Length: 95
Image 1 (cartoon, rainbow, N blue to C red):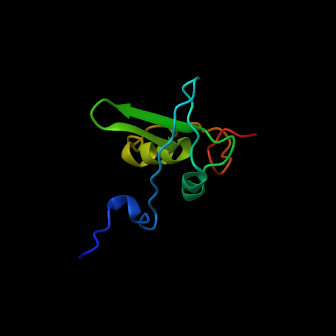
Image 2: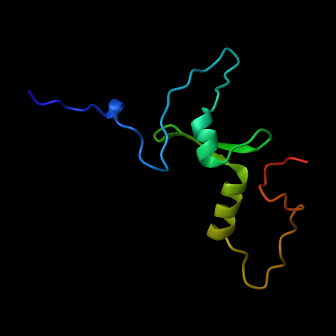
């Protein structure tokens, strides 16, 4: 008899994380420690929630999204530089 491993029994690949979470009465979820560690999410970080009816929900740190936008939409040639708030190094809005 051959033993077949189900996907649920496999550990996630390096750099990947999967878990189930429950939505509380106030609509809140807890991001599991493994995911927080993997993505460097710390208390006080600002996260951006993106939602699409067909593709689902994604959560990214705000500073990661800001860097993506800067690369995807560089300033036009000759445009004055955008003013930036003091860089905290993480963009998490902490003081």
